[in-house]
Length: 293
Image (cartoon, rainbow, N blue to C red):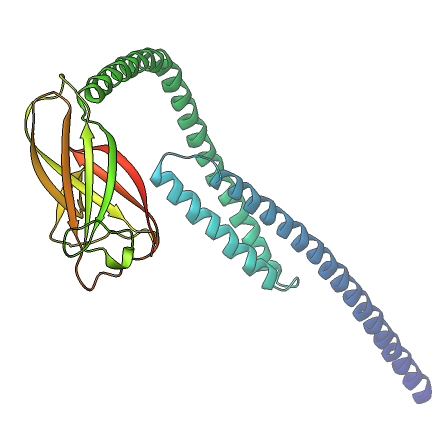
């Protein structure tokens, strides 16, 4: 009798243990399936966040002429990036947080829809204003073109008058002088450069006392006798000159002479030089000359 009871109890215990093992195996299998399902849902949710981030990038590339809306878009875009990063770091088994992130995604989408409506409204308004202003712009363009034509005509007329009234040096000859003011052919003996020039007749030029400025450019491209204190106005600038002199002009051809006295320390180099003449704010003549040692 006792043995039968023991066997019965043992059989019940074995049945219970077997049942527990089977139940535990079933629970583990369900848990694995649940984790696998959550992993898939997590991956799908990540893809949805990535798609949303791409959409935000697209809207950021648009020409949104509203700073407030642009700032809001930037904030939401950063929010999506932060949530996406958090989702990537969240374990698939954390079903609660994944569900919360899924709700956050839905919220961001609703916010984005509102922004899209605002953007569309702004675009529609801009398109309407553009269409309304098209005729005005066309008329303004016609007026602008006409004004430019008149300006060009006036400029051309002014330039013609200016050129007509400009003095012009038609010829210039160089004579090299030594310390005794005698002619020399050797640059090493030069003490003074004499320039004899002729200004053409011009009855349209205003008569009176004129200031003539000359710049002598060396073969190296520097100004001979450059002095920061010796400058004259030319094209809204003050540029240095080598020599200057005054003469009286009465509209007829004028022959004149100017001199450039060289300092003892001046190193006269062999090569081609240029002398440029200026008067009344205009370049009125440019002539090359050569010095040989």
